[in-house]
Length: 558
Image (cartoon, rainbow, N blue to C red; front, side, top):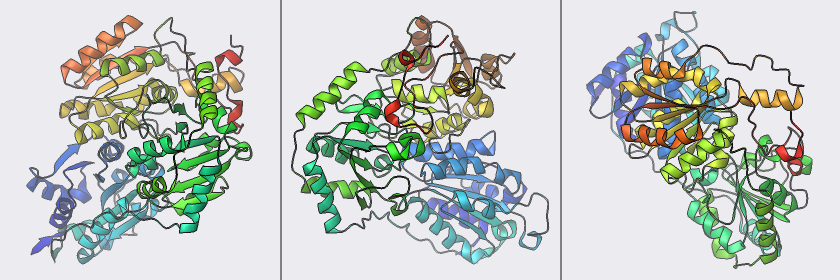
C-alpha cells in the first residue's frame, strides 16, 4: 500500500508493538505528529514539558517494562535537548529509539533554520545513529533501529528523518518484528575453567550488575548463589536483581557500598562478576581491587572483558543462558566458615544513621515500611540517590531506576513518569534532592496534565548535598556555589503546576504524609526538610582501595 513517510513511521511503531511515545512537536516533525493524531487510539503520545523530559520518560518506561522506549523531537534545539537523555540511556544500556525530524534534504548543510546534524552529534552516545534521506529507506531503517536497540547489550538508537521524507510517498509492506535472540559465544573449555575455579574456591563472592536485570536472570542468579554458597553484593544498576532481604545479600559495593561488601570482596578468593562492568565507582583503585582473588567475568559485551580489570576467566553471552548452563555443571558447595565470616561482618558493620531527627535514610525506611517494599523507586543523582539505594530493600528487578553511568541530575522525575505510564498498576515514587529537582521540575506539569499518579519526594537540605560532602571532607569546608538557601518554595511550585503538595519537617509527619499521598491517586509532591550537613556513609575516597571504606565513626567531624 502507498503511504507517506509519516504514516510509515506510525505503522512501523505499531508493527514493533509501541503503545506509548514521549515527545514534543515542532516545525520539522509536524507531518509525523499529524500522522500520530490520526492513530491516537493506538499509540498514546505523552507531551512532556521539555524534550529532555521526553528522553528520560522513554528511558524510565524502558527500564520499568523491558520494552523499547520511544521519544520524539523536532530538528535543531528539539533534537539536541534529547542528547542528555540519550547519553543517560547509553551509559546504562537502556533500549531506546529516538526519532527526530530534520530540515528538508536540499536545506541540509546550509545552516538552515533549526538545522543540526543530530545523527553526527549522537554517534558517540548511541549504538547507531541514522539520517534517512530517501523514503524507501525509512521502514527498513526503523526496523533496524528497534532490532539494534534490543540486541546484545541494549542501548539507544537515533533515527533522524528529513522533513521531505516524512511527506514523500512510498510502497509500504508490513513485516513481523524480529524476535530477540539470546546468544552465547564461550567455549566448552572456558565453561569448564570457570567451574573448576568455583569448585576450588573456599571464599567465593558474587558481584552483581545491571546485566542480570536486562537478561532477566534473577532466578538463575539466586540458584547460582545457593549452589556455590556465596554472599552477593550489587551495583547501583543491579538493585533488585537479587532479593535485598536475603541473608546472602551484603548490600551495595563501591564508593558508597557497605563495609561488608567492600571488605568481603577484598578478602574473597574468587570474585564472580555477573553482568557488571567494573566501573570506577565500584573498583576504586584497580591495582588493589579483589587482589586476593581470582576473578571470573560473565557479560554479554565482549568489549567489557579485561577493559577495566584483568580477569582470570570469562564467559561471553546472555547471562540467563550462561547461568542456566553453569548451574547444571557445578555441584552444590558448602562454605560454612566463609559465610560465618560474612555474617559477622554484617553484624559488626550495619548501615546506621542519626535517627534523632528527620533524615533521608529515615524517609526511605518509612517508604519501605508503608509500601511493604512494593513500590517502584526512581531517583535523581547525589546523596539522596545513595540513601535510596542503601535504605530501601529492593526484592524484584525493574523496581529501582537511576542514572548510574552518566549521573544525570534531573533524570528521576521524567523517568518516574515513564515508569508509571509503563507500569500503571505500580506505585511509582521519585526521590530527588532539591538541586536535582530544580533542573526538570517543570515535568510536574506533565504529571498533572495526564493525572499520572506519581509521588515526587524532594529531599530538601538547601544545598548541593553530595558536592558539599566532598567540600567538607576534601576541600577544607570551602562551600563554593553549593548553598541553595534561597526563596524557592517547592510546595507552591508544585501547586502552581497542578499537583498537590505536602511539607514534612518532623519524623512523625512522614508516614501520614506518604499514606495521604498514596490515597490521592494523583501527582503529589512531598517536601522533606533535612539538615544541610547529613552525609552519606560508608564512603571510599576516589581512587582509594575499597578496603579503605570509612564511615562517620572513623572520622572526627565538627
